[in-house]
Image (cartoon, rainbow, N blue to C red):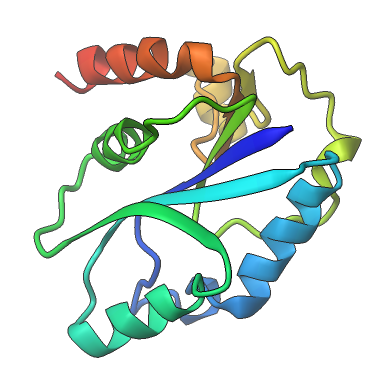
Length: 162
């Protein structure tokens, strides 16, 4: 199975030093994803610049991996969907599966322990109870879906952002 691992959002937040993307988190992601019997992982990312030194240090984490495309923007857009849309728009090859996730996710269990349907859009987590009960919101932590839904998801997010 060929997979596009698509990161989005902030790779580093100064006010959350524990959740800054690092080699440990990256290895955690790869270990969890590889539980799905993946043959190839290509990486795409959309994020925001901290400074040139931190940005280069961040990109060096992907040196021995298939980093296909990335955007590091200087100006921050506060809408969460903006980074999700821009990260997904980078994916220009055909994949069996796309995983779109935030940088700060840390898997407690491997992905093969989740009930993932490779033919559907998988939203693995509900939002906090109050938001789930009010609006049936889902968490933005991770989305897993086949490539055929990429345009549909980006279109829906664009409409909801506007």
